[in-house]
Amino acid sequence: MKAEDPAASREESESYFAKAAELMAKYGIEQAMLADANPGRDRPADRVIQVEGGYVVDRIDLLFSILRPLGLQGIRLRGANGKLGAEVHVFGYEADIQRAELLFTSLLLQAFNGMRHGRPMWGESVIAYRKTWLMGFSRAVEDRLEAAEARARGEAVDGANGRSAELVLADRASVVLASYRAAYPKTQGRKRSVVGSGFSAGGRAGNAADLGGTRVGSGGRRGLTA
Image 1 (cartoon, rainbow, N blue to C red):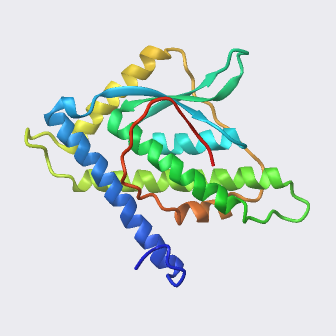
Image 2 (image 1 turned 180 degrees about the vertical axis):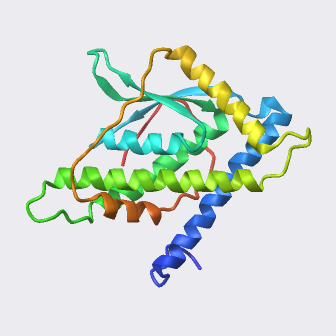
């Protein structure tokens, strides 16, 4: 059964994509375990991702919903005018950054294709509806990624050196956080809120989204749009 098959039920598609997400999470854990035994395979890195297109704040929100479950840290950069811009400085291990970029590109397309089919309530601002739709999508994606990563950690076997996946990932998280704090020692997180009726519809779309890309690309500073 292919999830893209129009004859497939919603339940079948969601099951297919859930399994694909778990496979991608397992791939990430496997790469981390291999790098723990051979550090030259995967090193700490940082990358600036430029986010392009409309609804830039919502696009960046989706990016952070991917970064957090994958053990990455990021900060939205300010432009020359001192205002928050469309660039995000990401810290993590190279393989995880590549995974996040792949997911972000795929999920942007899925999110904006789905958002455009949404219907706001009578009299509601289309922009308000779409912003809450995208927020619901991002929250569902983050929850699913966290669940897939947790299952993959629980099922992973110890490395050849006897270290568990939990220990390996905790060490990697410490390295990433130290790099992030060294670069931005005074950073504080922010919460955002939006008003509109699209959150539930966006959440349903996020729960049905394909999280299972497995191609790993390369590159540095780049722009991502949809």
